[in-house]
Image (tube, rainbow, N blue to C red; front, side, top):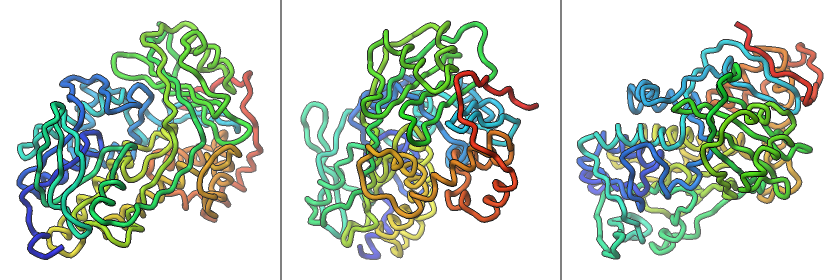
Length: 459
């Protein structure tokens, strides 16, 4: 990429108008005269599910780390979400966490997040981003390929829903099309080598539906029965969302998976390690059918390992790294990646940092998500994928000790919640200082049983 080309700031093109594409567009609008967002869907004007978000009916979490970074990118977005109906949740006091080690302690904390449907999260971000004067949405259009070479992309070939093919020239390109990204195919057409990939597939199935809670609701706003490894194969979660509704997701591995059979949803909940979810649903009113998904494998596209790649084409969000949705990392990873792009762009526009450098920086960010999102999955003997690394083998043991200590020790539970909310890196969970504190706690493992009542929060 020449210096002249690198300093052009006329037009940036973002493929995909989900959370990753929207936050990328907001960042690009700070540097380019115009930004075009391209999406295959007819984008709704209200917070409703759209076809291009196939997992939109399942629980989505904007982790505390993601919410704080989103607030930097779009100041005031947290307040806008709450005004639209998103529910503030103290992750220490309002979040009920059960693992095979027992119930995590509950206490007031500084870890405040929000729960809402994926449709509301995306709608609120989209409304803010599309209000920016430099951004244009091109909906019901699909990118067929890129024009240029292995050194630089000049244009995108875009097909309308009527079949008309357009060519859009741009100076910078972002692929934010998600799990189904065709980046490898597009790059091969430009003469680039094969795009390396890593996959970890625990063969998890999710089944979700929305409920109207009973009049007498529990003292928690979100509940999570977490699968932390064998012999556990089933888990589930409930989150309070806009309109005072509950969204409920049940999950299981392989032959232990839930189905779309509505009559089987509550009976499946009764097979979880604790009856808390089944008891909550027993007097709740179903509002929607059961929706399932099997597209839950973790997959990384390693642009940082590409010896040749265009200097002005980057991958963001699930296009770069998609994870098992049970850990609710996707939106937060996308937001953190957009923040990294914001820091990178001034160097790029000065001609000193082609996309290859960005992808190396992005890989360092995604390593944390990948480690936390695959270490537990790799414990299951039926999981398919690359052999676990040393850290992937060590981290689950550290998590076990931390979760066990968190059933009695507020500090240990706070540390885990910080890691869960992407405020703390996985390496810190293996630190000698934390190990010494856990050793002093003398916390034996106390498996969660059906007769253990959920703890009340300590005020």
